[in-house]
Image (cartoon, rainbow, N blue to C red; front, side):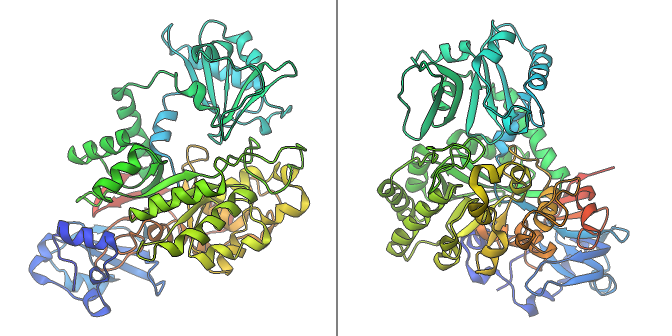
Length: 571
């Protein structure tokens, strides 16, 4: 069976469900339908990397795309010009074409929110943080909170956590609330804490959270993991008008960087409604694979109504995102042994083993995919142990369950992902951000199990790559560069950080294309350039697959196409 040119709603949903009939065979891929040639766009004179199962590269390539956005044929320019003589032609002048890139873990709504707050990423001292906050304060009304994101004390000369007194001295008349770069800690001033109307003194902590306190038991202003919500709950929400405008800017950013899809983890029903509204208005220019956040109303909604497959193919939701532990940078990641630089601290497991298993059962019983955040070796072991118990209980569940981040693994746990069929959703730029200080956290032995991409891949684990934006830069070229070099942009360290864990260029790009699509059950729609799939592709200013590795971060996107429509064109 060959997917029809109008790509009917029924067939699209079958494709999203993974029905094999939607995938054309080789004979059908080469078929030509002359009757619709006048409705075909032929992009030609390009070097096309298909990333299909044959990994074909077509030096003088062309791609015929129907008016409904389906790829009709991929081949040599001369052959397709003969097959589609009436097609509208787009000459790519020898530029490189790749499948549209997919970020397998990026917070699209979170990125939009970050655009409404002070940007503290890259600050090298508390003094620089204060200057950025003073500058941003000039844009605020007198009663507004001063909100910001992106600080990282590990990048400061004094890498101890800051305190509320630092903020009180500068901002004594308005609440200040600042999210850490990893999204797992926040820093507030006294006025922000007062708004929560809670007594934060003493020695109590919420489950899965930590309130930093001084020797007298008074809160220092640093809240970790589940403690963040104690203050976050009283932060005034952004207006829908402001958030809608910011969401538009965020999507434009993704398209300009070659991202045609994103897996957005941990969203709520209001976010789904925003995406649906944009689809109805023709204002969602990329694909969103949405993961419901937690065990609340979104899970119940999905269990009651079934997985969400929007007929446009632009919005799919069939996964639920959970948390096992915190983050390494804020020492909330759960470790099997103490932090090397903080004796007595092993981080935070958010739930006990039985609760994790019960949560998985609830999700799998609804036919949904589990995607669970785990960073520390104890967090990852808890998740793997739970999967080993629960997955066999649901043989009819479609599977493809995931661990988000998979940063620290004990050696014995590395092969278990492949054995259980669990996908590693990993972010290469986390490694090159963390490499300066991570050995101090873990010590010389455990560090060898950090970001073990090669070991996981060699054991048969499928890696779906992303960035975790806005924690890291949105630019996927930086992720590809980090994956193949394990170096920062200055080329440090020479030869790469634990270079035996590097990926090849082909493996890295697959992680951002076909393997990311597989992790979202969408490999029959997107992820490679083949007849019968959707025409999601990008045009680059140089050959990403052949330029020196040092040039990968400089690769620029000239055009981005989604569903056969050019949605971005650079200068």
